[in-house]
Structure formats: structure tokens, C-alpha cells
Length: 110
Image 1 (cartoon, rainbow, N blue to C red):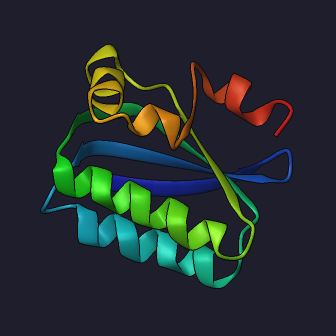
Image 2: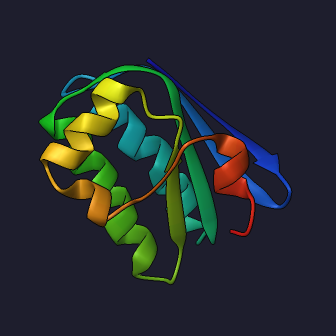
Image 3: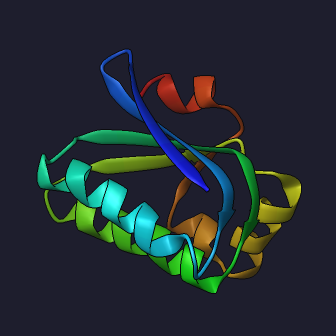
């Protein structure tokens, strides 16, 4: 699992690679805690290289979103595989998150 951040058009883009599960979730949370402590206003998480998400991974993403909302931050998810998008639909989390088809779409009009 790898987490990389970059700046694009004044926004923070996060690329997660690998599995978002019970093993990797603490590291992902730790990486985002740094951004949240800086009150980063807008983050796009690109999930194009994520092969698997389990319940602890979903909980971590929800926690990141909740923590960002406490200071008015916004987060979008992009490039979910059909399998992962289906997981968000089954759990009704697609109503909580802004999910975009591509990183470009997530960056535009944010």
C-alpha cells in the first residue's frame, strides 16, 4: 500500500495504491491526519490503483471525511473500480461521499 499527495490547480490530490484494509487503514489515517491538522480545504482521493476495500477501509474514509467537515473541508473520491463503486452503493455510502468518474471531473468546479 502506498499513499502519495500532490498539488493540482491549488487542490490536494491523493493517490492510494494497493488494498485499503485493516492492515493499511492506520497508515492511511496517519497520512491524512497531517493534512487535516493543516486544515487542507479540498482533497481529491484517486482510487484508480486500489484493488480492494474492506469495512475498516470504509470506516477510515468516513472518519477522514468527518474530520474534514469539522473545519469546513471537502473531499471527493475519483476513479473507483466497478467493484469498489458497487461496495459504496451497497453500503449506501455513495450518498455520503461525492464520487466522480475521473480525477479531472473531481478537480473541475471543486
